[in-house]
Image (cartoon, rainbow, N blue to C red; front, side, top):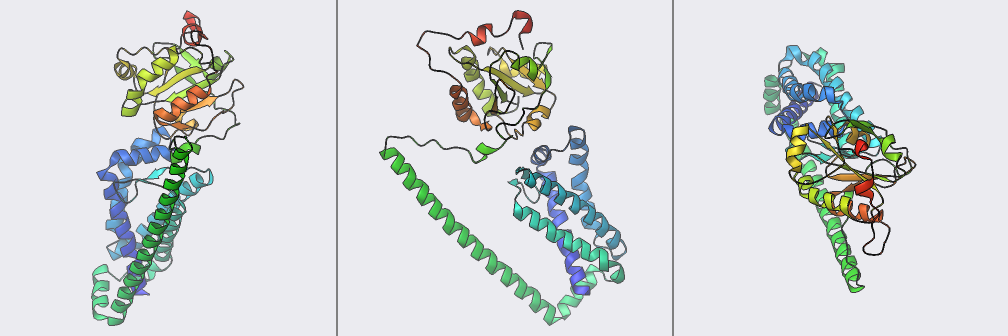
Length: 366
C-alpha cells in the first residue's frame, strides 16, 4: 500500500509541475485556452495569474508527509473542476485547445477526459488512504524502492509495457495516416483529371452554431459613435454577414482591403459587418486609410463567444429571419466563398447599391 500511495503522489507532483511551468512559459496560449473554454471575461485575468502558481504549490505540498492529505483534497477538487469543464465542452461539440502540458496547445478530446479521470483516481486514492500513511515520506519511499528488487522489477516491467504500447500506437497511427494521405492524393489526382481544382477546407469548418438556430442578439458600439443591434441590421431585410476580427491578428489585417472591395462590389446582397475588439484607437490605426463603413467593437470576445467563433478571421451568415444560415468560415478564402455565395449573378455594370445606400447618413454603422 505504501508503495502505491507514494507512486500516486509522484504522478500528481510530476503532472502539476509540468502543467504549472507550461502555463507560465506560454501565458498567451493559456489565455486563449480560457477563452475557448468559455471562462467569463471577469475571471480570465485572476485565473491566468493564480492557476499556474496554485498548481506548482500543490506539487510542492505533496512532498512533505504532513501536508499530503489536505493537498490531495485540493488536487481532487481542482481536477474535478477541470474534468467538468472538459465534459461540458465535449458534450456541446466544442474542442477548445488546452495548453496543459506543453507550449503546443492541442484540442481537447476523449483522451483528455480519460487522462483527467486517471488523475482523479490518483488523488482520490490519496484522499481515502493517505491519512493512514502520513509517516511515509517520498525520500523513505525511494529508499524502499531501491532496497526492494521486486518493486524495482515491477516498475521496470511497467515502463517496458508502456513503451511497447506507445510504440505500437505510434506505428498504427502512422500507418493509418499514410493510407489517408495516399487516398487524398489519389482523390486530388482524379479531381485534377476531371478539370476540377481541389480546394482544401479547414478541419474546423463545421464549428459554430447549428444552421437554423436563432442567432444570438447583441448591441455593440459603432467605431465612430452610437450603437447598433442585430435587430437593427435585420430590419433592413437583407442577410447579415458577421466577420470577426482582431487588431492583433495578422491575417485579419491582411484581409481588410478585400473587405473594403466587397463593400463596394456591385451585386452583393448582404450587410457586411466587421466585428472587432479592442479600443477605438487600436482599430483606427489598424484600418489606416482603408475605408470600411460598418465596424462594430466588442469589449473582448463576448459576441464572438456567443457565436462560438474561436479564431479570427472568421465569419457567419445570418438570414433575414435572424437564423444562422451558414457554418463558420475560417480564413480569407472561405470567407470570400461565403460572401460570393450570397451574391446573385448580375449583368456587368449593374449595382445593388448596397454598400453606398444601405443606411441613411444618420444610421451609418461606423
